[in-house]
Length: 456
Ligand SMILES: [Ca+2]
Ligand SMILES: [Ca+2]
Ligand SMILES: [Ca+2]
Ligand SMILES: [Ca+2]
Image (cartoon, rainbow, N blue to C red; front, side, top):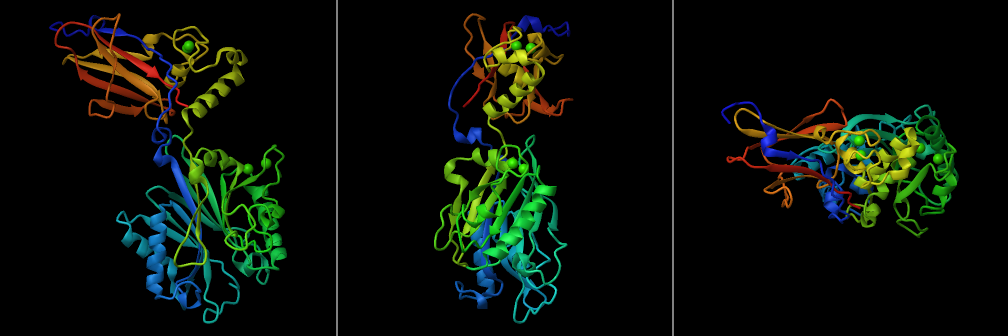
């Protein structure tokens, strides 16, 4: 290597290789943990004012400490709370809950906000009626706050909708992992209680669903809380009468789906629910059935925590299918040979590898442009390729082999070590991966290949 001029050809045989393996990957490879969001609703029964609680007979601080422990044990990212007592006479139970959460959770990353509107906000009497608030707490390690807002704030004083003033409370956040991060809006409800109030709940929810249809029809929405559907409970009683399952925008799909809470009309424990708009339904369906609709009892309340999980990271088959459909929309001919292992443009780079590396499946590409290998003056090989962001672990593997070209034994290269650098590609959907390793001491051949697998 005296000549100093890179002579990669002497060492290398470059080939982008596609080996189509249909295999089952473990779930933890298909579902990136960081791409999931667990949301819960919890009516904490007079949190901060246990004198009125029928469940908790200990002190105020023990009530709040226990509620914090229940929330941390659940492992949720966002909890919508009802009946958090916060007013100028009785203290701030949300602030005390956050202190407890951050003391018990060593990461100390909890934040929160409460609804400025509460029942009879226009004529408060905190001595006889401590202010029960809707509130949110969230883990800032996974949730980025965008804004909070009282919905329907134009509803006048003395109007008896929404429990006479406890208006819907909206939290807008950004969640999920790049490149699949999403803006999600959660709407926390605490509707009027008890049998015989179904007309007030109906009037409230017709008002809210009109608002959501007029201004939020395309948004990713989670509507959750204590719906208090005491007359006809479960997912298909009053909830259905309100119009959640209508197709108001005439796109052929119901505007909302029920994702957590009791489906059946039970005598009790069928009033707390989580609904998602059609924009979020695929993210809920991506989650294993056992995690989709959960109920966890709490010792501080007559209500359980009701929770759902969403996963914002599409599986590889979903990602490939979206890419395939986009190609077909501009080039319908592609549909004739659009399989992951097929090669429409006959450039010996299968469609699946073109998807992962960002080349065109309908224009011939030179294989040497996909995987480049160079030899620098200090005797290091530099192996480089472009890779689509957000591919599940193990779906694109760089293999290395030394020896005869006819019978190479491929070893996957460890791409987690210090020899690998990843940088942003000019295309925002891609990154550039560079592996730098010492060149073989003796003249010979080193082979590299990229292998794409479509896990299902
Ligand atoms: Ca919608
Ligand atoms: Ca619809
Ligand atoms: Ca091709
Ligand atoms: Ca091509």
